[in-house]
Image (tube, rainbow, N blue to C red; front, side):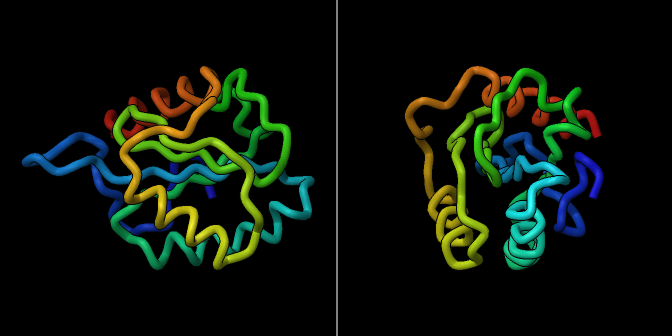
Amino acid sequence: MAAFSTSSAAPAPLARQEGHEPPLVVVALCAAWCNTCAEFRPVFDAIAAARPAMTFVWLDIEDDAEICGDLDVESFPTVLAFRGRRALHFGVTLPIAAVAARLIDELARRDQPSAGIPDAAIALCNALAAARSER
């Protein structure tokens, strides 16, 4: 999957429309050499397929290093979630369908960010939001 592709057939725009919130964007930050990431990929794709109103992005921190910038990912898989240009979550998740799905569903209801989201993660959210709005 290319850096900006999503699992939904018609990704929703990130701009606010008619008073509606932009969709939740969920980014999986992984690495090709990571066995846990390989286990997570089908889980992530299944969660994405079941949530067409959200946008899902898979980034390989090495292959997509230009996009990821200075973001330091310490454990895999790490999930970054944002709405519009508002970062909501940055953290490790287990590659277990029920755990990851519960996290993503909770993030869909969230309006306030988690504590301690690094500046580089916020910068990535802004870069992805800008790139998506240009499409």
